[in-house]
Image (cartoon, rainbow, N blue to C red; front, side):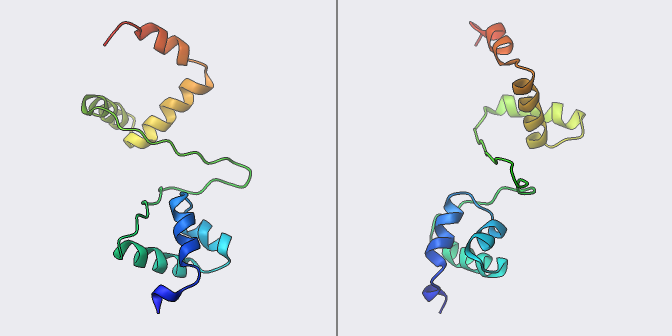
Length: 118
């Protein structure tokens, strides 16, 4: 019966696009429970459905952009120490750090100061 749910292909498509279950439910005018059940079934049957980002979804009018990157272990170790000293997770610290760098137009200053260094 699960495999005959007509919303399964749309739920899979929206999940792959990065929408959260609550957003998918709203988009498809269905319940979150149905979305979670379909996603669980898709994952159990081998579908590549990414993990959902944590935290609150963006408010109306905000643009949500998620950036993911892999960092060398020595960099994440340094970031972990800085984050811990500030009582933040690495993710919170990285977000705050990048926000300040971008908003205060510090990108050029930081990258220009490190040119030629490994």
